[in-house]
Amino acid sequence: MHASAQQAGPPVAGAPEPAALHVVDVPLGERSYSVHIGAGARSVLPGIIAALGARRAVLVSARPDDWNPETGVETLVLPARDGEPDKTLAAVGGLCSRFARFGLTRDDVVVSVGGGTTTDTVGLAASLFHRGVPVIHVPTTLLAQVDASIGGKTAVNLPEGKNLVGAYWQPKAVLCDTDYLGTLPRREWTNGYGEIARCMFIGTGDLRGLPVSEQIAASVARKAEIVVADERDAGLRHLLNYGHTLGHALERATDYALRHGEGVAIGTVFAGRLAGALGRIDDERVAEHLEVVEHYGLPTGLPESLDIAEAITLMRRDKKATRGLSFVLDGPAGAELVGDVEESLVATTLAGMPRQSHDLA
Ligand code: GLY
Image (cartoon, rainbow, N blue to C red; front, side, top):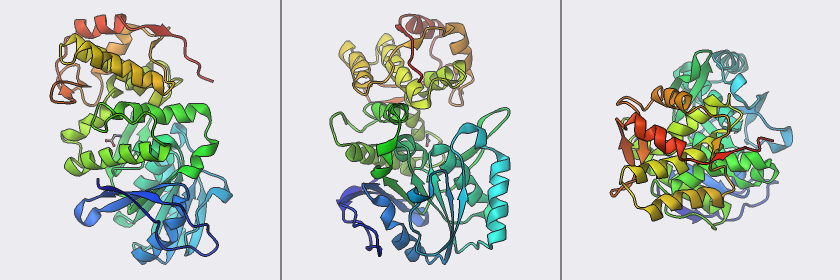
């Protein structure tokens, strides 16, 4: 919650001193932790592991060896692969077997290095092994740094659907090293910027033009506030789903050709239009939704092939849709979950959206 810029933790032999890092605290009582953000943030890992008192680590990494941070303790490195196909119960079982063969104890630590699918899968394995071992996430994509690795949600997919098996398991620390972002392909940047763009409507204010580490820190600080107020997703945490009801439907309707952040971006433009159609916000605020999404170079129109009836069917199945068609919408008192939105209004608002051919390369 509390965001501050401070020097990184203890220096590590042979490692360059990181410049000033942003540190965002997530105060959850005995499960409190800090998120360290900035260039070189991964170099604080040995100090954090030493402070935990862990003597051994398993580092599960979806990145090349030279990306893996030093741990300062005896370490087993296990390879992983980012991507939904590897986010399975079988992968979790495989990791737990490797932890067992290594002799990992509850006083040791697991470290995940990779995108959000890796931090999700490794986080779930850590939550289950010995009924819970400490985990530290080192997210390497913008999307994982601003959202997936923060807040303790872990999950894997079943053939029946995404994220159906999971647990809340807060990490001991999250290290968002912006050095990792330099090599990201364009679509990985836009994927993360989709989540950052929607932050303006859930309480961060306008982040456009700030250095990327400050945009990450502000997004993380807002997420931390929301998680602290509603760790188990009983109310306020719904806000994080701004733009997601349509976003998830677009991901599904395009068979995931549209990335998560791209779907959220289009869903954010739609959320602005729907809030306007319901008289919750004025035209200027509706336009701001489009302007912010355009600023980040994100898609703003519906896929050309989208069938509106299919999109509505998919949105009806959304996890948050406990009261008819439900959306997180901006309004006079800020964003909130709005249920029982008239299907005909949703359909006409969707029909009024421009169509766009998306560059999915
Ligand atoms: N990504 C949404 C949440 O953490 O609740």
